[in-house]
Image (cartoon, rainbow, N blue to C red):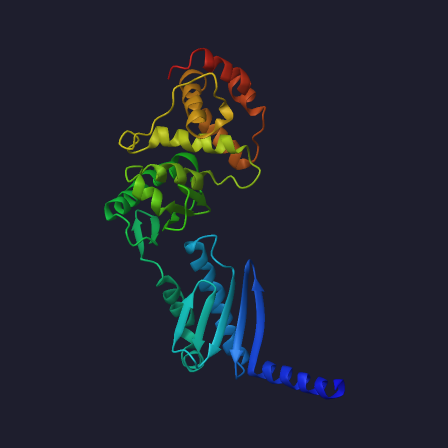
Length: 318
């Protein structure tokens, strides 16, 4: 029985392998599984396909969100017309592929982006904003205010704090994202739910674009310092903090400078007023250069941070 079954099993495996050729290609953080049914692709066509994928899909994933699948099955067969593309799954008609290899990248980009509600590119005075919405119910007035705030505030922050900052920024409003907003590289992700509930909180843009300007990278300094600076910048440069009912909280003895966000920002506002004007800009520069340490406070102000906090607690008026 074993002598009979073994050749049958081997024959079945051989037939399946020939009927469906599978090749896995990895590049950077992405994995492409090419599933090729009933035929072989010549080397030139396969290169065109992989080149187009590794340009179009990472660009889509960057815009779509860091949760987007990094492993993609790409099936080539005549069972589907043209190209169909979505997160993690692409199908391409074999005849179309052979006839239009030069259109692969452009078509892939288009098919992937069809799943968004809108994608707009706005350019002004050397700055660019790509605005992607995945929310069919996004208030268009809110959208326009987010765009206007970017073009009003971001160039000021770049000029004031870091002239090397990117001038091409991506906004994504996502229905699946449940926090408020976050910045990564040149991309800001907004919660559609939050913006619907807080349509006046436009200066989320001010805080998050400052994170892009900061660009500290890893291990540059404590999180409370990074977030405190971003909220201090919102306090100083925000376009409508009053309208969104955003303000710095009153001091109380339960607070610490490590509380981050508005509490730390108020402490920084007090330092700028009473101890060292321009300190936040100096700290920002040190963090970006990775030269910041606990001794920076003493060097820049003549006092340790704990001494500064004690003085602040004694008279926290700003």
